[in-house]
Image 1 (cartoon, helix red, strand yellow):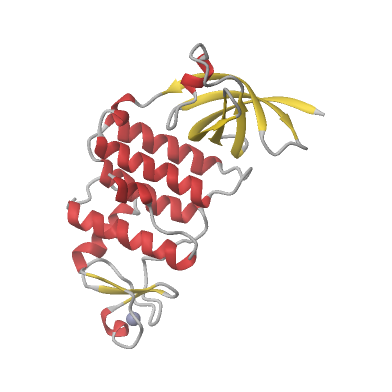
Image 2: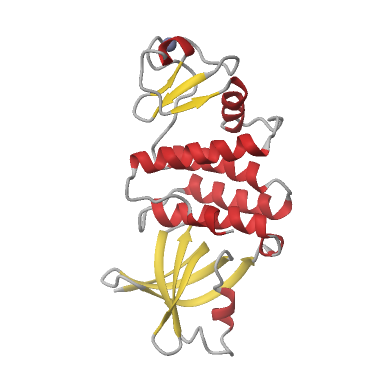
Length: 244
Ligand SMILES: [Zn+2]
């Protein structure tokens, strides 16, 4: 039995298939991450082939058979092609890193409405605003929470003292944050100055008044990358951030 399904999706990847087709990898709102064939996509006359470009937000109609690993696409319409991201190398770098996170960590066919909405919202914001590194850092924390590795910022993991961004703290990949006193007695994998920790707390909140500093933001991105590598050793870090 086959069914016809319509869903919104982001194009994550596109590879050649056969003489004239593509296989697209999509992150969709209603079906999670899926792969599907776009027949004839490489023909110069194919409209669908052009619309199914990496990073585009599209609406797809899928002819879905449970027994098939790769589904068939019967229609694609464009929702947004994020022109301002594609025109700006810095924006493109961070938008590509977002797609890379989805590619690496989201399981096939696993739906998460909050993650889908958060992802399209941040791409809309990167497209419209001028702070891609700041927006990506916020997204990275949100993403880590959504895939189930919540980082607790509020209290010391040993003595349970409140941590507030007024003192330096230490982080252990296994246990979490330690206050300055407890940091002396535990293995510390990453040290945070008071300012760096305050920025991390601000990024993880809904506040929009974080005092931004590119060097600090880059340090936080490196910290989050190392945190993921520690928990998922097969992950080799975000290639998009090295490529640009
Ligand atoms: Zn403590």
